[in-house]
Image (cartoon, rainbow, N blue to C red; front, side, top):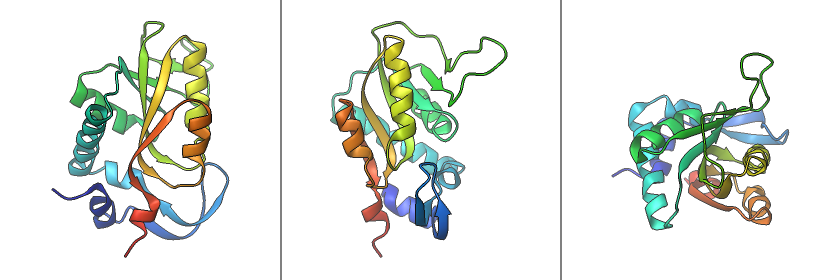
Length: 175
């Protein structure tokens, strides 16, 4: 089977140039996971690999969680693969409807496995984890497709959360 690193390279999900990341950092490369997850074969591969990581790390989860929008396709695919219900965390509460920031029903004291597309500093997933913890949910693991190796591992560790990458940027940038 093709590695996730090879799949990301093959679909040209790594682009070079001048980019501003969600964290505000400037970068000479961009990892366009959205380009990869638009391809069913790669999205399926990501879901299968995350499912494998869940087993390898003996992760107990009651829900699959993600931050909108980048993590949603990944979380849906993992939810379908694992048969675990989905929780989506909006970046901001909506001004209409239920006005909630969390999409999905949940039971307090349940475990949520967060999935992410790319982790740089870990800022957006940390905000989501804080919100979930404030609602009485337990979050101890984040599985990310690509860790850019720019601080997310350390930041999540300080919050008592283990970051588990499918790939690291140092592997992706190798020729």
